[in-house]
Length: 300
Image 1 (cartoon, rainbow, N blue to C red):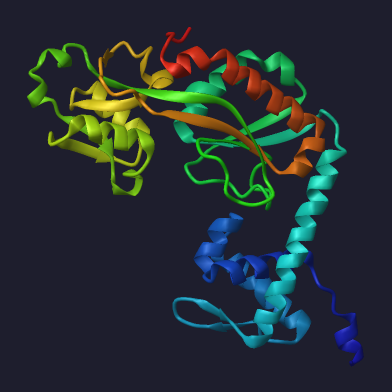
Image 2: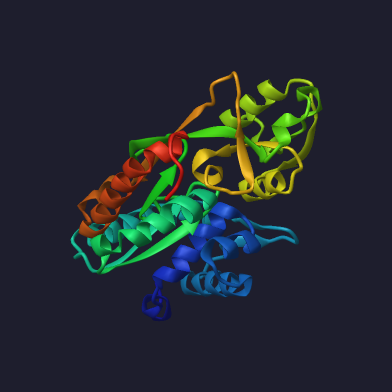
C-alpha cells in the first residue's frame, strides 16, 4: 500500500451516507431519509470512493447500483451503523434528566390527545426538551429515528420493548340531526383503499352494507372535517369527536373495535432517565384519558 493511500482518512458521515444510499438505492430517497439535499449525498459518497480508491456505485439514470465492491462494503457499513446506534443508545442511557426526547405518534393522536395533556403535565418533565413527531409510518427506533413511540398496533420488528398502555374506541359521528334521516338514505365517509383493512374501516363497512361511501381519505383529519361539513357518517375516535360541538354520536348495534395503544422503545432506552420520565408521563396520561378514549366521558 502506498503512502498516499495510508494517509487518507475515512469520515464516519461519508460511510453513513453510503450505507443509506446502498439501502435505499436512489439519491432522492437517501436525501429524504437523511434530511439533506441529494447533492450532499452524492458528494459524501464520492468523497468515500476517493478515500478508498474504489468505485462503490454504477451511476444509472434512475438509480445508483452497487458494484461488487460496494455490495461487500455495504454489509460492513450496515454493521458499523448498528454499532454507532448502539453506542448512541448507550450514551443516552447514562445521560441525565436534562436533554431532549423524541416521541413518534400517529398525527391526530399526538395533536389532539397527547400534546394538550403533555402540556398540562409540564411540571413532570420541566428539564426535558420534548419533540413530538406526528407520523403515520412507524419510526425506526433501532436506527434512532425516535426515542420512543405510541402506536396502534403491536410492533413486529424484532428487539423492541412494547407495553399496552390503554385502548381507543370509535363511534359513528355525523352533524346534528343527521340521524333523523331515513336510515336507507345515510351516506358514509371512510378510509381509502390503502387503509381498507384497519379494524374501524371494516366495522364501518359492515354497518354501511350496500349504502354509499361518498367520501374517502387516508387522513383522519379530513374525515373529521367531512363529517363536520355534513357529508355523511364517519367512524371517528371518541377522544377526537366526543367534544366536537358540530357532531353527534349515532347509536349502532355493532360494537366498535378496540384499538390498543402501545408504548414502544428500544430496550437500551430504558436506561435513559429522561426517556423513562416521558414514558411514565405517557402511561399516566393515557390512563387518565381512558374513559374519554373509550367513549364514556367528554373531554375537559
